[in-house]
Amino acid sequence: MRPLMRATLLGLTALVAAWQAPTARAEDAFPSHVVKLVVPAAGGSTTDAIARLLADKLGRAWSQPVVVENIAGGAMNIGAEHVAKAAPDGYTLMVTPPSPVSINQLLYNDLGYDPRKFTAVALLAKIANALVVRNDLPAKDVKELIAYTKANPGKLSFGSQGAGSTAHLSASQLEVLAGIKMVHVPYRGALPALNDVIAGHIDMFFDTLTTSVPMWRAGKVRILAVAGAERNASVPELPTVAEQGVPGFRSITWFVLVAPPGTPAAVADKINRDVNAAFGELGEKFAALRLEPMPGSAADAARFVADESALWGKVIAEAHVTLK
Image (cartoon, rainbow, N blue to C red; front, side, top):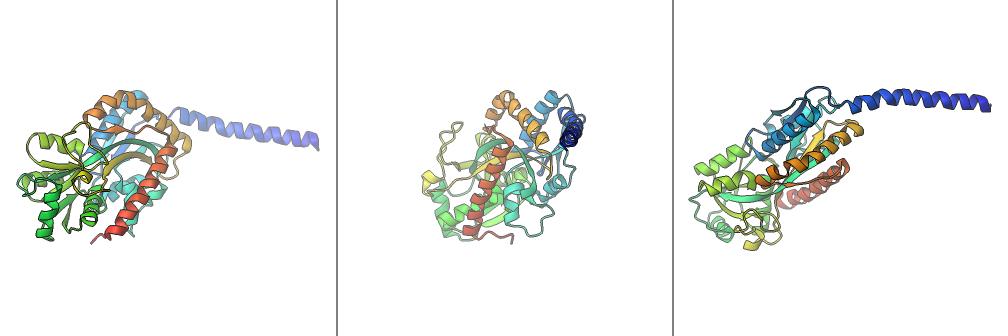
């Protein structure tokens, strides 16, 4: 029996090696053709800017074209569903803010995909949000904004990139903590919402510092506060929301790279390593956008997304956020 067992084991070993060899070669060769980075929002957003910087860097590192495709609409669910149904081979990826991967499953019962099944590839960056208001709003700080809203219940309007977006939940968090009520106006992206604040069509918007600070410096909007836990080094003159009478308030936007469900771990890890290698060159460009890089493993990305889902789930429950 021993010679027979030995022969059997040798045969199995050879079979496994034969199976692993082409698999390893395929992963080592990744990518062999064009890679697509889907952004589930319109162009001009912070997400779009990150995707284009990443596409340029990875394209040069891989010696293959990396293209950005904007698939907006449906509270970012349309683009997310497109990626979820793509082949799990690493050639279709998604650069996304929180909603499609950590929030939407808490609000929608009819999603065409399961956000929890995306393959987390890499955390990209984070940034504090800013409380942006129209220039002629009769409130000079957060305390005055709260007083104005209480004196005019249900009249102050806030924009968002869609139901369940970070901007939507940030405003809902402010409603709960400050005891106020506002009108939600959803848009198909951050830029249209910001443009309507500039035009005076809506009163306020929780936008990222990346896109709002240039508009503020140009005198097109006012920023009442940054929404992070502490002041931002790039605009230290701006106080936080918490400093102005709303303790515990925190709102940041983060960005993550994910792949379709079922993407092999070896492919995800290879992309993760290349993304982390890109941070060195992207550091100055991220800093110019007031973004903080978030290097780490694919497992780190998965844990972070899970933790953020729990955090925003609590906000949704406390604020009784619905899609109505």
